[in-house]
Length: 425
Image (cartoon, rainbow, N blue to C red; front, side):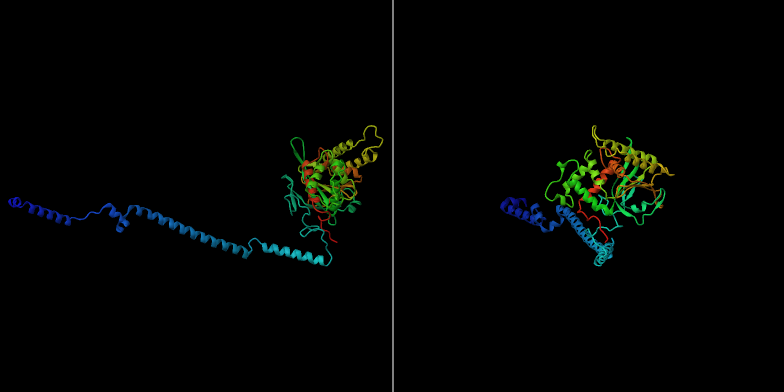
């Protein structure tokens, strides 16, 4: 064979070329990387695409779950709202029915002429909730006092009429069934010493029937301050004013709280006859009438001394006559005589100032027992000075009570005269 190759070299080359070509056809083809990426069959086994697909499926499933939960929540909320309205869970229908019935009753009484309203709809009638809107204490029967010993004071109380007291003797029981209703104006705590030891809670009440007159006097005091005419409210028609706007109320408030001018302002309000007021006093600790009396006497004496006439004056002072001394002895006797001496914690003492300025002392040993009459002082000056001890001057028996009372009076003068109380005619 080698001799044949050497004899025909070209032939031998062709044979070898064909043999190599045949071997190339029988060998499996290898695909390039580029071809493998383009092949659609290879997409199913691409590791990059295979790793991202499970995460997309999880996100899709979470979105579907969130949508389903939102739909369920909307349906549940709607069902709850429907059930609340349908079954009147909060009793709104009952309240509307009560209000409707009350309006119908008022309309019926007004139509037959038995009731006349001086104020807008919603004002309480005599015997109902309080007629004054105290800050934070709207339509309540009890007002917080600020001490846990005597936690509450009533917003309204009923006291005996003055005519019933004229024929009474010391210690006689009193009936409040046919008496007058009084409205709370403000209250506070009486404290002593630098330790601020609480002695009693005191609140000022005014007869509801006299609130209109109180309004007139307050407005007149604001328009014509008794001690400084330069501070008077000026303008056309001020004397015909029936209420005070906020700046005027603030001016009146400052006047009543003023250490110098306040005494004259309160005197102008109290001195004239026609307004019945009462101080309700409830001790926070055991005390006695002598102790209470001595405190009032010291205050009365100090104020009377301030009113002494100037040296060289010919006219006597208002409180320097013999009659006033006799009246002070009567005042001391009211609290110094009798069998009862002690005033235990929680028992009630009332100082009642009548329309003519008379001072009656009433005592109630227990809430279930009737009030007892202790005595009377006819001199108007005595009761006025006792009242000023709580309301006017540089120092008062309870600063908290004074400020609370003045705030209550601001509620009175913000409404037109005659619209605070409803009258039955």
